[in-house]
View 1 (cartoon, rainbow, N blue to C red):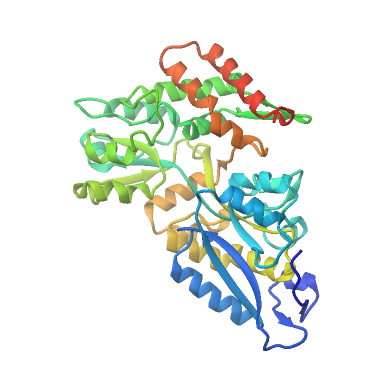
View 2: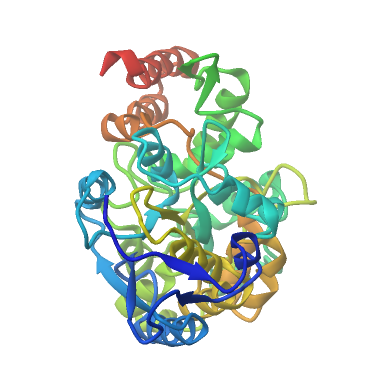
Amino acid sequence: MRRRRPLALVCVSAALLSGCGLVAREDAAEQRSVTVWLMKDSASKDFVDRFTEEFEGDHPGLDLQVRIQQWTGIGEKVRAALKADGTGGPDVIEVGNTQVPQYAEDGGLLDLTLESMRDWGLRDWLPGLAEPGQWMSRQYGVPWYAANRVVVYRKDLFERAGITAPPRTQQEWLDITERLDTGGTQGIYLAGQDWYTLAGFIWEEGGELARQRGAVWQGTLDSAAALRGMDYYRRLQALGDGPVDADEEHPPQAGVFAGGQVAQIVAVPGLARAIVEQNPELEGKLGFFPVPGKSAGAPGAVFTGGSDLVVAKNTDAREAAVAVVEALAGEKWNTELARAMNYVPNKKSLAAAVAGEEGVTAMAAGAARGRATPTTPRWGAVEADNPIKEYMTAVLKGGDAATEARRASERVTDLLDLDGE
């Protein structure tokens, strides 16, 4: 365990959660460090610099050390840091929202349930960030920012086809995509193994990728609801020339969209920059709308990616670490991050902060119904092997959906078996 001289509060610990500052008990001039690991490109240098300056000003005697980490290999690096007993490790760590259960199961994270239940606005957090931040009904990850898929479309091709407004329902989406899929234009480019998009369709039908029954997780791709989601995916995917045996990165769909007559893709809004860089003629011609749902009253369910903030259990700067999380996830700095980086803020009530940007507005609307993968530390094993992709390809090549779904569900169940490690 790292040992530093103790911090004292100018008020009781509970009051800290309302914004009270920290001071050193002994020598106020002595600078004390709290270390934060943030991931590369999650926040701009300007944001980090401004946050650091204000946080240190609000907490005399504290020296905030922000260290930028690479995503590649971060899992093992975080695990090692959470198990370490020496000095110099991180106190606060940014982690992918679906990674929290893995670290919590290892016992390396501080339980933040009480803090998040007091006045951090737990009930308003985006479910796609808050739910995977839990483990065994305790909150270990605090939502920081979100990003999810929307439909990126060619406004000029919509106008040429006489389509004056984006679709509001799944059925309308199929109808207009069929109208667009003509004369050398693909109605939509949807790769056959884009399983994140499929997950949204399954959730929209009320299905799940897997369910927990007692202590056991079971794959549920063969449920009636999940099969309806796959059928919708099959019908939509057929209205373009996406490869049935590859995902959206093989080839990168930004290049496909930039290089041909493609009316729509499903992607994060930020991909539009890469599209325009590859084809400057598309500047000003790209639009965005949320993935439609079954009814016009709400967007469809989507997979929500993004980051949560966690506190290392082995920290000896607990109060300072919690104060960092509170500030970063609080309204002021969370909305500033969202505006600076075109993210979705961590609360539905903050969506107005990004209302001026069309792509982020569409993303925020979808994020309100965002979901995440099953909250089990074994889900990483499913993604590594990914029988869902194999299942999708088999169906799109004409295989019986019920048979292929049953086979894939059995494989998911095997991969989620904690005793099978």
